[in-house]
Image 1 (cartoon, rainbow, N blue to C red):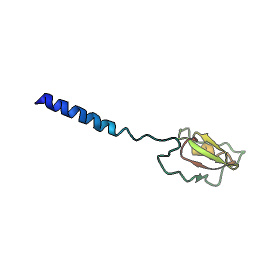
Image 2 (cartoon, rainbow, N blue to C red):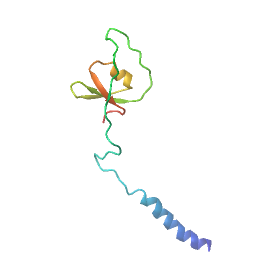
Image 3 (tube, one colour):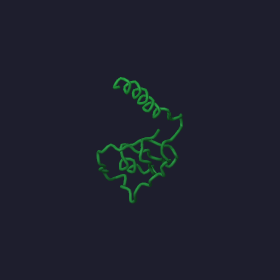
Image 4 (cartoon, helix red, strand yellow):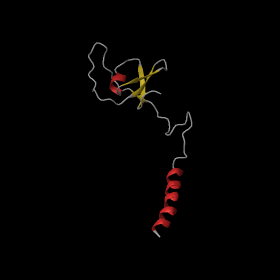
Length: 93
C-alpha cells in the first residue's frame, strides 16, 4: 500500500512543482508598474556647502535636467547634484 502511494504521489508532486515554473518573463516585461519619479526636496544645499548624506546604500536612478539617467547610492547623494531633477527608487537599467 505504501509503495502504491509513493508511486502515485511522487509524479503528482513533481507535476505540481513544475507547473509553477512555466511562467517565464519575456525580454522587456516589467513585473511592476512604472514608478512616477520623485522630485528632489527643496531647498537644496548650496554648492559651496559641504553636503553630509547618510552612507546607506539604497540605489536610485537619478534623472538629469537633460533627460539622461545615472545610478546614485541613495536619494540624498543624487539630489545633492543641482543638475538632478528627480529620481526613482531603483538603480538605472
